[in-house]
Image 1 (cartoon, helix red, strand yellow):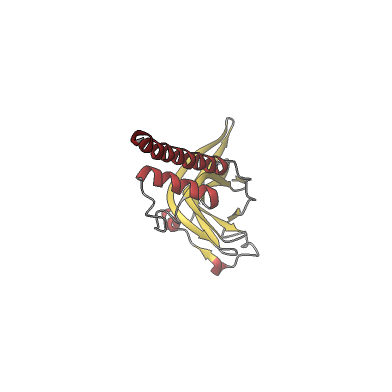
Image 2 (image 1 turned 135 degrees about the horizontal axis):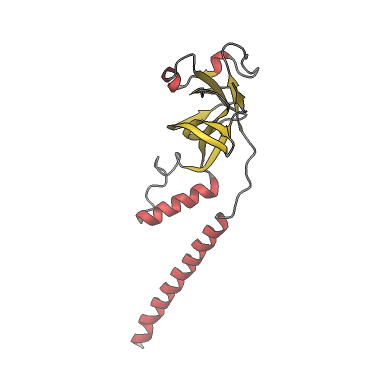
Length: 192
């Protein structure tokens, strides 16, 4: 009799751990399904100081100037404006210039950014680049979007599993500041 009493609670515990494990696997599987791609929220416009007016939705006071503005000489510098149709946050990994070659688009140079941009509707962010010597070229911005919903919960659960701790559910490392995706935004082609 004593032997049966000890095994019954052990089987109950093993059974409840298995049920909880199955529940976690089911939730993670349901969250891993692909989400529909959101509509394009960002746009990039080329701006030459001498001959192109600002877009009608953006006034000169509604532009956040680029930190790299002073890096390039005014004769070789080209300015582009990145805007959003709604408030959003993106992580800018890099900006650069691609040149068209017979083999396709090739990166002429790339500038690592590592910046978080909190874009507001009607306020543009300036991106300055150095114009290539000649040919057809375009500017690109490589960015990630802020994680939300099931993908954020999935990342938090993964980190909790790795750290074996659920104690940091409201901390900065857990809440905001998680980015995913490798998106690219390209300007229209520029010919010189």
